Amino acid sequence: MHHLRRLRAEPQGSLSPAGAPPNSNPRFFFWCVALVLGLLNVWARRNEVSPDSISYIEIAWATARSGLHQVVNAYWSPLYPFLLSLVFRYLHPQVQWEFTAAHLLNFAVYVASLASFEMFLKELILQRQTARESPEKSLAVPPRAVWIWGYVFFLWASYFWLGPVWVTPDLCVAVLVYLATTLLFRIRRDPGDWLVFAGLGALLGLGYLAKGAMFPLSFVFLFSAFWLSRMAGACFRAAALRVLLAAAVYAGFALPLILSLSAMKGRPTFGDAGRINYAEFVNRATRSVHWQGGPPGTGTPLHPTRKIFSDPAAYEFISPVQGSYPPWYDPSYWYDGARPHFSIRAQSGALFRASNMYLKIFSKSGALWVVLLAVCVARRKALTWGKFASGAGLVVLPSVAALVMYSLVLVEFRYVAPFALMLMLWMLARMRIVMGADPQLLRRFHLAVKLATALTVAWAVGRDLYAAIRNRPYEPWVVAQQLHAMGIPPGTDVGYIGTGLDAYWAHLAGVRIIVEIPDIEQVRFVAADAARRQQVLALFSSVGARAVVTRNADAANPTDGWRQIPGTHHFIWQQPWLIAAPGKT
Image (cartoon, rainbow, N blue to C red; front, side, top):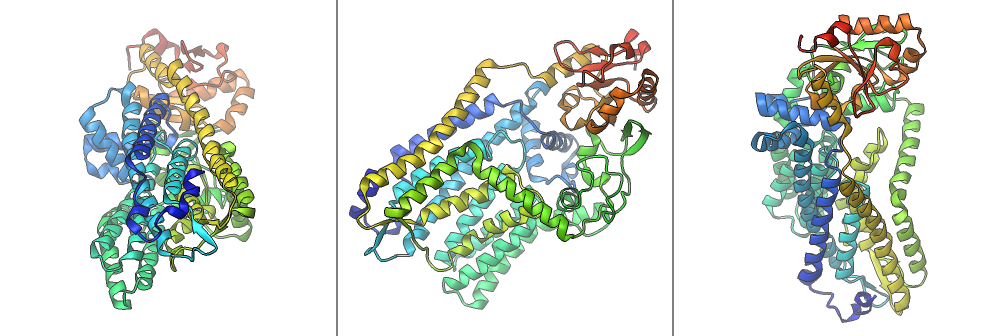
């Protein structure tokens, strides 16, 4: 690797050249690649959403139409739907372009994440230079090489961990934690800048508004800021005053939401997502929807979805929560009364599942295993681990704390991506070249790192190109159009055989699912005799469902009156008089 071989000729004393991005040509190239691939990714997957996405989008529309108070929700954090509401208010996208508009917002946040990651990488390289290790036995990897690794791993992580296709606030969180970590680096270099501490408080406040999990992590950031300031030479009083400033700015962002949520719930809370997720994923309460109580110790629901039939189980939820699928518009309402509790056995199970998930995250695409193997081989003769300046570990302490925090409850790619990426670059930046190392081995190491990531990204790019060229019809949109053609106008209440979390057609059609038989109970509905099936369908009609939809072909028995929705894999059931007079309500 010619960059590594030129190392001895590079000045090691100047911080500015080392910390600056590579010259304009490589930087311009990487930015162009990142922007083009980001746009391709967004366009190819412009219709991809998740159940969480629908909730954020519907809260955003409610905010755009009815005011900022609609954004206050004890389960879904407000920053992302607020940003979406601005997009919807000024672009006024038609329903079929709504998901595309959300993805365009994500692309803008993706660009911001690249810029903020670049700032983090610059500070990381500067921090490495301040260690000033003796060059007698080893030399630092050239900054240019670290810059290239950073860009390559950012692109890789954007495809396999967290990218603009996720219509969730996680990319916003990534921007904010990159910037907050950058400020921790700056505090280590210059603890006297009050604006840096004020900026840190603002970033942490926005982080909490973006995702409730940032509330506990914010205190880890403040802890690190205090001790980094002390290690940089500030006295106890000066460090404490600066951290108090950061905390005050943070409180200015966080307190209005905390007070609003506490008033809404009638109890102190900074958000219920963590409490509910712990009850679901650790204490094994019913996940996502239709918690009716249990297991023992998890509390009693104050207002659960209403069970209206037992075999198969059917649940009604027509009021009081709005949304195309009320159980997921505000899960905190339906899970009021949940009481998470600690159990060694349950917590051990959660940690085991988290370990498996972290292994899966590391193994995604196999690229990181190749990089790890390359590091192990190169360490034998060419590389060694260096040190940062004292206290540098405090900069990545919040990232470590985030990985530990999520391991206690639930680990997902998008939750941990920015923290894992920063830790990975922090480890790579510590590497140093042993004096007398074989240049050919170094070249092979550098090539392995670049090819492992580049080839897997190329495969993902090819997949996106195929999806963009193929341009398959989006079935939920086809279902929505056909429902309108079959006399189901926006505002209609419908039933569903299945769990409505994936029923995106309901949002696109402007209808509300008010009653359903969840996925786990579908087999009982299919196995029931014709009389019982008709009894269930009649019950759906009696609670206000003007039609019943399913995508389970086995459940859609034609003898019961089911018809296939043209051009889709979905089926619809209606009372005969409604079919005969589709214009009536």
